Image (cartoon, rainbow, N blue to C red; front, side, top):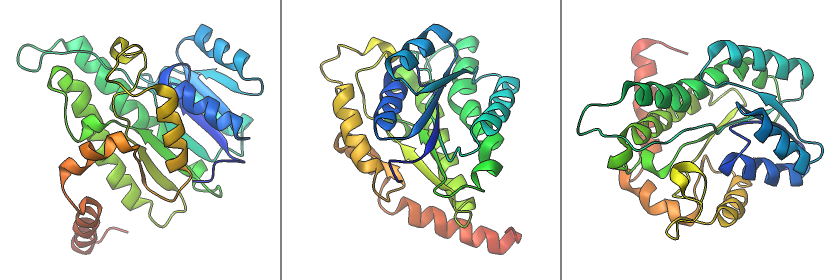
Length: 252
């Protein structure tokens, strides 16, 4: 995607990867609007980045998503990039009784939220030049972390959804990207000081370099061995499968 001159909306933009992406894109001359639930965190980010804007959003609430989408389109009609970054991760116990609140919150935030957010904005984005929908998934979409099995499964679901949406929007002018980070030093699982995790600034530098190319999947070097786990030619197989399905079912 082009890295300058966009109007970009980033969910989960008040901390971690979302904030770092927002700041990197802001520094490159884009109009950036971030969203999150915590007003104080949002205010801190925009105070540190004059010209950036923020809007409160509960990504688990369909009414909040619809309200924010309408506000964005009205106040920022040039909006052409959506980055679905909001997500939560907790340790769980898939070998035993699952905590239902953890299960529901993780699926609502990591899967239903980005699907609903994109749905609310997609018809607007179809009218814009250089339109992009991006999703922050994880290398755990390809190699699950068993002690966080719910989180890993939500990222696998998101990856599957991305493949379908990219296919269905192939002639629309809207590009669908997937950013799949490895373990990065962020607030997720209190990983800020984890030596094995990738430093956030290094991750952002590598990600921005790849994001500026024409790839559909944004992978830093440390993510590539995990991505290769699914085997070769996944996109070719998925696209061929869907071309056959269109012929069978007569869909456009």
